[in-house]
Image (cartoon, rainbow, N blue to C red; front, side, top):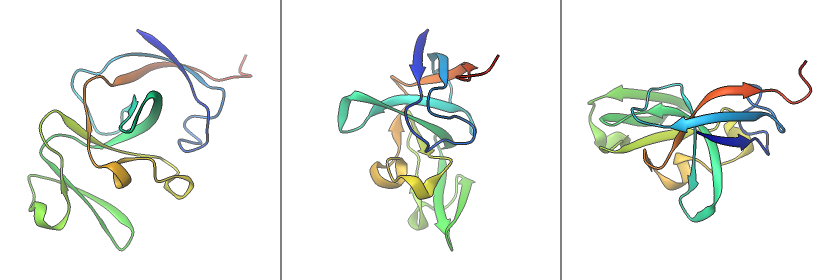
Length: 122
């Protein structure tokens, strides 16, 4: 288990700055899960995103809308390879620090959120 604290707004309103989360190692990714993983270009910086594509999925954008298909033709999108996942921010207009910029990310050493404590909640 590991603890994380949200520092920015890219996952709002699901997660807000100051939210604290308890997470466990991710074993098998599922679409919709919120995950933490090291930034692909900065090992000392962790990101929090939502899984939208799992191994074997093809992820693409059509007229700005996300389209995810299992086992589709990868010539018109990004094929998520084995051992990887495609992750996006909930508030995509706030950042491009997700799979749109750096492609699918490794499942290991990612963590999946299991419990959230909202700062200021009683």
